[in-house]
Length: 330
Image 1: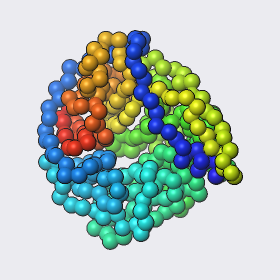
Image 2: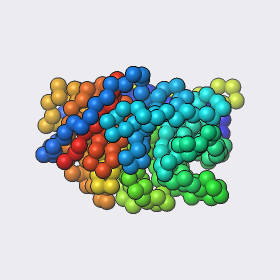
Image 3: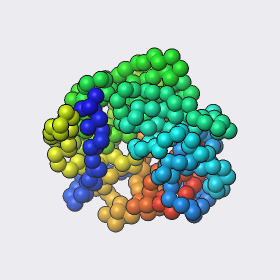
């Protein structure tokens, strides 16, 4: 497990694709009416939007509290994270049925509490760290972690009430601690479709909520092999893995409602203007049931300031460095 700890501690930041030549694909532009609903200037630095239905929350970098937002995106409540420790990143947040869930990856723990409760409960999900996670219900969590002593990543669905586990070996071929297959894990609103989109290559992996593969479908870009190279180094009694050359990120963020999967792409299409691509985030959309491409659209915000997305039905919320904005998708 020391091997896995070393791997996770040294997952380095990735480089963007230079886009200095044609990438070999075109985008189909959606005739979309994108109307801004609300905008709220934040009095502090935000980190991530998350929510459940109409309930919208905002985390902040110190991980000492989260904030509940109203329909006008203003802060109406503060939920203090009284977990008797300083949460260390990476940390992920989820909401559901009046509860807040905090996943602390390196400790392997999940903390949860009712919105009105005084203290958090804690559950140990794994002896070692994990690298991706989803909270499906109050008793069901999906993580991408490691078996003891193994550098091969596996998906695991864990029942936090009785400890039962189900495993999946999707994208577990390489024993490189997940360097080559690192990506984005998200779900639709109903939590019956889970999506894994690799950062560094073409592909959408759709699973059911028992982490069984339903389909693999390519994204519209042309990157089929990310050519990741990993170096193994010894440091005392710990083996550490490093990315030995910069990795070109293809897909940056992803999220879904019950109709569409939205993928923010890092690749410029051949029918895009370079200035427009540099200025605005481009979202490629796919049918969640089949993975087939629907079309693309630009989001009218500065892509350099985007931190997080949350979608509820046809309302898209965007967290920027200094504000929260909501849009209606027609």
